[in-house]
Amino acid sequence: MKITGIATLDHAPQVVAEWINELSDDLEWPDKGRTYLLLRETLHAVRDFLTVDEAADLSAQLPVLIRGIYFDGWVPSRTPAHPRAKKDFIARVSARFVDDPLDEEERAIAAVFDLLRRHVSEGEFDQVANSMRKSLRELWT
Image (cartoon, rainbow, N blue to C red):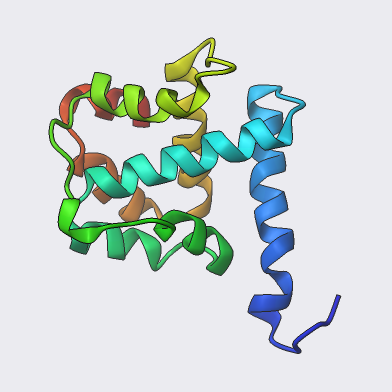
Protein backbone atom coordinates (compact mmCIF):
# COMPACT_ATOMS: atom_id res chain seq x y z
CA MET A 1 0.00 0.00 0.00
CA LYS A 2 1.40 3.35 -1.03
CA ILE A 3 0.71 5.93 1.67
CA THR A 4 3.68 8.29 1.73
CA GLY A 5 5.47 7.25 -1.44
CA ILE A 6 8.55 6.52 0.69
CA ALA A 7 9.14 2.80 0.31
CA THR A 8 10.94 2.36 3.63
CA LEU A 9 8.04 3.87 5.56
CA ASP A 10 5.24 2.35 3.53
CA HIS A 11 6.78 -1.11 3.88
CA ALA A 12 7.61 -0.79 7.63
CA PRO A 13 4.39 -2.30 9.08
CA GLN A 14 4.71 -5.28 6.75
CA VAL A 15 8.30 -5.86 7.93
CA VAL A 16 7.21 -5.88 11.59
CA ALA A 17 4.42 -8.33 10.73
CA GLU A 18 6.94 -10.56 8.94
CA TRP A 19 9.28 -10.57 11.96
CA ILE A 20 6.40 -11.35 14.34
CA ASN A 21 5.06 -14.07 12.04
CA GLU A 22 8.52 -15.66 11.70
CA LEU A 23 9.02 -15.64 15.46
CA SER A 24 5.50 -16.99 16.07
CA ASP A 25 6.17 -19.80 13.62
CA ASP A 26 9.56 -20.58 15.19
CA LEU A 27 8.00 -20.83 18.65
CA GLU A 28 4.69 -22.28 17.46
CA TRP A 29 2.87 -19.52 19.35
CA PRO A 30 -0.54 -18.54 17.99
CA ASP A 31 -0.71 -15.35 20.10
CA LYS A 32 0.93 -12.56 18.08
CA GLY A 33 0.62 -10.12 20.98
CA ARG A 34 2.68 -12.42 23.17
CA THR A 35 5.20 -12.85 20.36
CA TYR A 36 5.48 -9.08 19.96
CA LEU A 37 6.03 -8.70 23.71
CA LEU A 38 8.82 -11.28 23.62
CA LEU A 39 10.45 -9.56 20.64
CA ARG A 40 10.23 -6.14 22.25
CA GLU A 41 11.48 -7.20 25.67
CA THR A 42 14.34 -9.23 24.25
CA LEU A 43 15.40 -6.37 21.96
CA HIS A 44 15.30 -4.00 24.94
CA ALA A 45 17.39 -6.36 27.05
CA VAL A 46 19.94 -6.75 24.23
CA ARG A 47 20.11 -2.98 23.83
CA ASP A 48 20.52 -2.44 27.57
CA PHE A 49 23.26 -5.06 27.90
CA LEU A 50 25.36 -3.38 25.18
CA THR A 51 27.45 -0.24 25.35
CA VAL A 52 25.88 2.82 23.74
CA ASP A 53 28.12 2.47 20.67
CA GLU A 54 27.36 -1.24 20.27
CA ALA A 55 23.62 -0.60 20.68
CA ALA A 56 23.79 2.05 17.96
CA ASP A 57 25.75 -0.25 15.65
CA LEU A 58 23.13 -2.97 15.94
CA SER A 59 20.30 -0.51 15.39
CA ALA A 60 21.78 0.57 12.07
CA GLN A 61 20.97 -2.89 10.70
CA LEU A 62 17.39 -3.03 11.95
CA PRO A 63 14.43 -2.08 9.74
CA VAL A 64 13.02 1.35 10.56
CA LEU A 65 10.01 0.29 12.64
CA ILE A 66 11.92 -2.52 14.39
CA ARG A 67 14.55 0.13 15.21
CA GLY A 68 11.81 2.24 16.77
CA ILE A 69 10.72 -0.69 18.94
CA TYR A 70 14.36 -1.30 19.87
CA PHE A 71 14.93 2.30 20.99
CA ASP A 72 11.53 2.86 22.64
CA GLY A 73 12.07 3.98 26.24
CA TRP A 74 15.87 3.80 26.06
CA VAL A 75 17.92 5.75 28.59
CA PRO A 76 21.49 5.59 27.23
CA SER A 77 23.02 6.77 30.51
CA ARG A 78 21.79 3.53 32.12
CA THR A 79 23.64 1.27 29.70
CA PRO A 80 25.21 -1.13 29.83
CA ALA A 81 23.05 -2.59 32.57
CA HIS A 82 24.66 -4.26 35.57
CA PRO A 83 24.76 -7.07 36.45
CA ARG A 84 24.81 -8.63 32.99
CA ALA A 85 24.80 -12.37 33.57
CA LYS A 86 22.55 -14.79 31.70
CA LYS A 87 20.17 -15.07 34.66
CA ASP A 88 19.84 -11.26 34.76
CA PHE A 89 19.02 -11.13 31.06
CA ILE A 90 16.41 -13.88 31.37
CA ALA A 91 14.90 -12.23 34.45
CA ARG A 92 14.65 -8.91 32.63
CA VAL A 93 12.75 -10.45 29.70
CA SER A 94 10.61 -12.72 31.89
CA ALA A 95 9.55 -9.87 34.17
CA ARG A 96 7.07 -8.70 31.52
CA PHE A 97 5.34 -12.08 31.46
CA VAL A 98 3.95 -12.04 35.01
CA ASP A 99 0.36 -12.84 34.05
CA ASP A 100 1.33 -15.54 31.56
CA PRO A 101 4.88 -16.71 32.39
CA LEU A 102 7.20 -18.06 29.72
CA ASP A 103 7.37 -21.85 29.90
CA GLU A 104 10.76 -22.18 28.25
CA GLU A 105 12.46 -18.84 28.81
CA GLU A 106 15.80 -19.77 27.28
CA ARG A 107 14.20 -21.30 24.19
CA ALA A 108 12.02 -18.22 23.67
CA ILE A 109 14.92 -15.79 24.01
CA ALA A 110 17.14 -17.95 21.79
CA ALA A 111 14.40 -17.82 19.12
CA VAL A 112 14.63 -14.01 19.10
CA PHE A 113 18.41 -14.25 18.79
CA ASP A 114 17.94 -16.64 15.86
CA LEU A 115 15.54 -14.16 14.26
CA LEU A 116 18.21 -11.48 14.59
CA ARG A 117 20.77 -13.84 13.06
CA ARG A 118 18.57 -14.12 9.97
CA HIS A 119 18.05 -10.38 9.61
CA VAL A 120 21.36 -8.68 10.45
CA SER A 121 24.78 -9.26 8.97
CA GLU A 122 26.84 -12.13 10.30
CA GLY A 123 29.57 -9.72 11.38
CA GLU A 124 27.17 -7.56 13.40
CA PHE A 125 25.47 -10.58 14.90
CA ASP A 126 28.82 -12.01 15.99
CA GLN A 127 29.92 -8.64 17.37
CA VAL A 128 26.79 -8.35 19.51
CA ALA A 129 27.03 -11.97 20.68
CA ASN A 130 30.68 -11.49 21.62
CA SER A 131 29.76 -8.38 23.62
CA MET A 132 27.63 -10.51 25.92
CA ARG A 133 28.90 -12.41 28.94
CA LYS A 134 30.00 -15.95 28.17
CA SER A 135 27.03 -17.52 29.97
CA LEU A 136 24.57 -15.47 27.90
CA ARG A 137 26.46 -16.13 24.68
CA GLU A 138 25.27 -19.75 24.91
CA LEU A 139 21.78 -18.59 23.92
CA TRP A 140 23.16 -16.87 20.80
CA THR A 141 24.41 -20.09 19.23
